[in-house]
Length: 219
Image 1 (cartoon, rainbow, N blue to C red):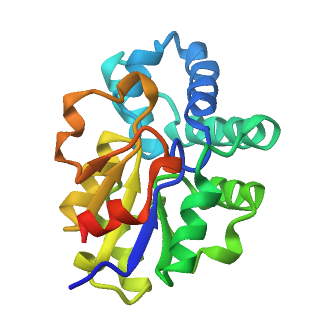
Image 2 (image 1 turned 45 degrees about the vertical axis):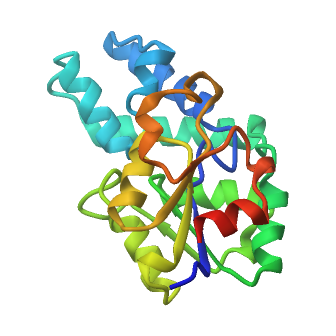
């Protein structure tokens, strides 16, 4: 069965928002005595905000805190940062135009809340090109669980084995592969050579490097 559907992750792939998520989390966490390093933050990239908070609060033995309020504070902060400082990553227009020309069905599957997704999609001006947007916000499990990808494929009326996913994080890659989809990873420069991405079908340094020959090799 040939590939006919592409599903994109969002944060760190389409928009340079991971540093902004780190800033937002750092600013909120410092009030609880947690000061994450960029390296520590990178280990939980791709998780939903509530799981990210749970992970680090358990790690630092922070108890008796309203996690929902912390989640809201981080989300509010990152939306503000994306609106003021968010930048489209290289190659987004290139790769979208390619799949539009190839008449692929196009979806987006993100761990972020819909409130964040809406801000990003509007900022990048790509809403008209995306047929289905799925958030893991209200799912029982987020990435690395494959459900958000499976939901996106189902909404696009595609079989998982017809889907190609683009991801930047390890957790996202695992989610895509667990969904039985092809996965291209575009990791952050600091992790571009990390062996943990070995399960990906292809690794790129930028979306701008994607082309039809690479698609043929995957299909």
